[in-house]
Length: 337
Image (tube, rainbow, N blue to C red; front, side, top):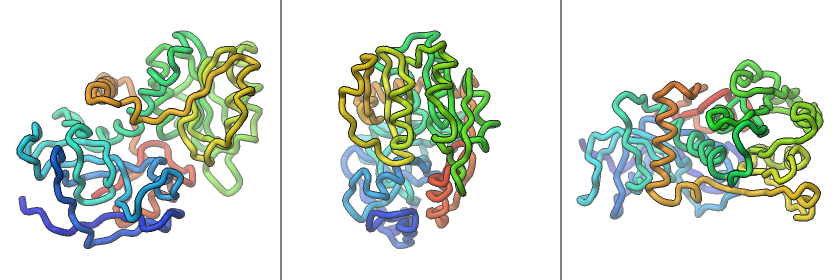
């Protein structure tokens, strides 16, 4: 296969809102470095972390090709590669919003023959994040049969996390906006339905006394674990919902970054807090593939309900980010290359 020298890519030149995403048609195709393979992308995943990079919340060197998750076919390898041209793969690596991406081989996952590309890509950032949240990040401070609170289970990572938490034997209290009740109700034991923020599709976390409802559901005890990807709007609620020696896992910033708070806030119930990210929970190839294989296994066994909500053309990159940040999604979002 002849590989061109230029390609279509979505490039960020300066931090800002979704309109800073620029579709360029003559961006250089990356050259391979040792240990990399070149992948011709079929799809790229759209994730909230992409918006954090775009806005500068997680700083990057500019300009950069957006995205960190994709999948397609290997079109070029280096001499020492265990992969071969034509292999179907998915991966986690920067630069996925493009026709071609050079990816370190240790971040590449060969696909089972019976797995569709869009489903495999959906398993990566969101599926692996959900996996480490419910199996590792809680530091075993929750046991089977105990309650956890997971926000925003109507879509995205927490839709996965709610399902995987139940597979671990935990009881799940979920939240969602009114418009996503039908998508969320099957993923939890108890559902707290919130009003939608004025003029938006995302939840208004002031519309319901979540902490009071959690205490009512748990008989006044609280939950042993909170999985919170919302951020600024829910930090106080999360801390109030914890049981003694429970853990607050703050992993996202959908409503803004969590502000600093005094550690003495934890003393009332001897609670814990952690602010993890995926990279530290796939620190080795072995740990990465352990999580991949478990998530792929859930999919093969029919244990996960995976929804690809919407697929955007790469030319509509701006619309993809606006759709995500507007709270509209009910599942995985993808760009088609």
